[in-house]
Amino acid sequence: MEQEISPEEKYEKIIEQLSDPELVSNRKKLGELSKEKKQLEEIIEAKKELEKIEKQIKENNEMINSGQDPELSLLAKTEIESLNRRKEDLEKIVKGINQENSESSINSVIIEIRAGTGGKEAALFAGDLFKMYSKYALLKNWEQKTLNSHQDELGGFKEIVFQLKGKDIWSKMKYEGGVHRVQRIPETEKSGRIHTSTATVAVLPKANKTELNIKPDDLRIDLFRSSGPGGQNVNKRETAVRITHIPSGIAVSSQTERNQLQNKESAMSILEAKLLEKKKEKEIEKTGSKRKDQIGQAKRAEKIRTYNFPQDRVTEHRIKKNWHNIEGIMEGDIEQIIKSLQKDLEE
Image 1 (cartoon, rainbow, N blue to C red):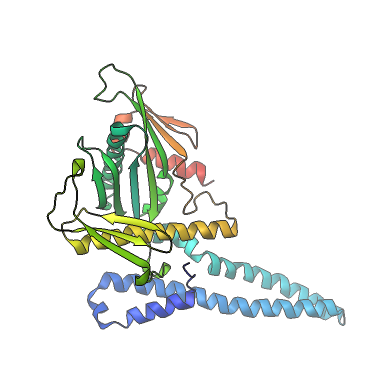
Image 2: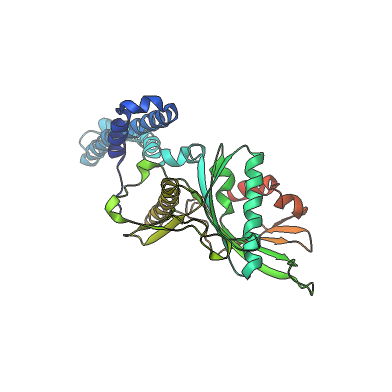
């Protein structure tokens, strides 16, 4: 079981990283660590002040309960009101600073699309969703990198995992997780019968290194040959990587690069995102949080959207709204849907 890392421990790790002389040449990393250091300093200072205020509140309550001096008791009550207001502000900083800044600070997500029911048509639909998000990312000037994929002989995807990086990425993509359903006549269908197929989408924030404590001994790394459509080996060397996190049983793989090290890095990115999701889910269960935008909320078994090609209609089931121009939507024109989800689900 992974232990929660305290802000103080995170701070010490960042100080250690900042002391590395080689970091000077990596301006981007230096900037990220410096920003996180400042945020942690704010949390740590807030914790110290919160302890003092709680002590003051306790002392004032003891004075009131003693009933010895009515005037002092009245002053203590007035002071408690002021202290409680300050206490609320500090608790928001201590408990919620990461939440408060989460959407703006999360600039990278990992998206996993898997073919669901419907065989080869489901794999083609998974490919269509990948194309839709790729074109949307292009419109938003986001960076994209494929981390892992399993393509079939028709060009569809049994599974594809990719990373998107850019401004407002989490606030835009967080509601895309769930089951997407398509209703259309497949190209392979000669009788003209409409088929219904599904694909599941998971959207995971890319984990920050300080959010997790993964021990090397907890990982099992296996190497294998990359495979192409139909399962044939496309590389003679074992460049594909599978990483299993032994305590959780989570296994991930990457085979998109020709370089073993790059595939390992991609697999680790997927694993870290999955472990972070698992960690957040445990925190939500523990606290009983009901936030609609919570990490881990996007349940893969929940049908969220239907793409009906014969009727030229996309239905968003969570907010009970429809859009037409399905061809345009599949070409990446999903901003209107995303804005409606943000408006209706965040009120």
